[in-house]
Image (cartoon, rainbow, N blue to C red):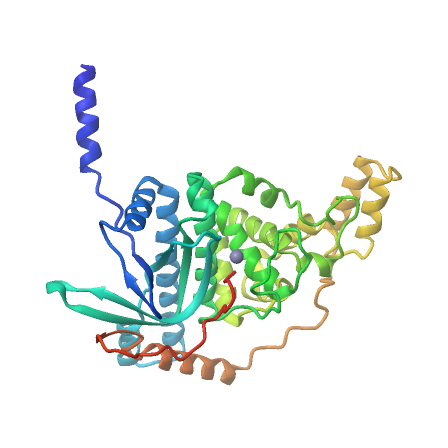
Length: 399
Ligand SMILES: [Zn+2]
């Protein structure tokens, strides 16, 4: 009986098809890249990891899903603006869903991502060589001799790839760009106070890591909201400092994605709508776009900033609590009272300017023109000396 079960199990193992998500494995080759396949040790290693990790498969499928949703949103917008059926069909036909591109390098550093213009040489049917040009396309660099890969800790590797994939998802919503920051290319960490742009980009990516990997080591502090304090935890950051801290931003995104229905996708819609430059701007646009979530958003902001989103007293009350002048119960009561109050956002007192209709339409027209170019991802015969013109988005080391 046991033997029969084992046989059935083995048969099942062989009948489970390999994961066939939209992935492209490449490696550097001179100025360009070359597609790699079976027989390449890095390819074989990564493919076996992908096949054995349902979490990583979810990351890949999510990347495709977010692009399909974006395409559907675009068509909906076009219809609302009275675009012709012909134009809509043209966009549907030419709007390419990008594969998740993993650049497997022999480097020993960490993983990174960048939005680039680049060429991949591939071998097509009948051994024909092709050059495929990718414009403004996110690419994940995986250092195959880096600690994350070599350690064999799959959960941590999945978290790392999910983090970079989070950047890719955001880049697509920001139309190949990112919130501005002077910190790109420098080292950064979750509790670091940087600027609004870096905190928004890294906070989003940092949430994506444990969101897909469920890696406890990373999930717990993000879910707990451990980054609202200065390093010693004796004092609370100011609201402005919190909005410039990637860890705080990741905790806010975590709560939106995990407690608001369709929260993850709503974030993407906000990214795409105005490409906000920091978390305060993001929250403003979110409230405008999904007003029925206002109460939930207020609660999330108050919990994650320990009341600093509404009261300039938050730092002092926390210090009093740490010094023993206020009991734990008293402190919790203060927080609860704060949550009952009206929301006055301290981060951005300016009223958000209403979006001018013609401005939005113009932007969309340009965008549509850009994506209806059938050559967005084009295949051309091999030619020598086809230089890349545009600089890489992150010239130093990615983010
Ligand atoms: Zn990052």
